[in-house]
Length: 121
Image (tube, rainbow, N blue to C red):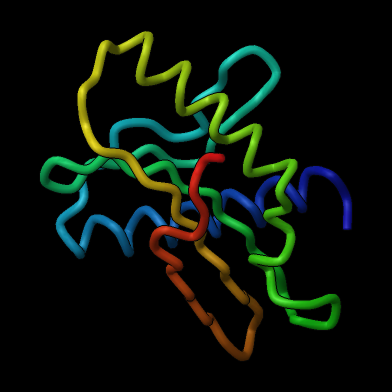
């Protein structure tokens, strides 16, 4: 798979996750928010809760579930981005970290939204 196709495939998964969140009452505040060399896929708000979302999209589970790619190292990076975002915007919301694990191929679209997937610390 070329890098362009990989990027487009990831963007499709992020679009699916955003639509999923919107239909459940979330507001999308940011997509692909970057801080330094780090990034978080989606920042959303629902009621008084700020949600930092990592989206992993695969075309099969041959190498495991997509969510398994959100390693502890990746979690720490997202937590850094979240702290920077909260500080730069001077926000005072409870926050959480979610993961979308998406299988997307011509035979199926399987969406798993894992709320509170991990915590800082």
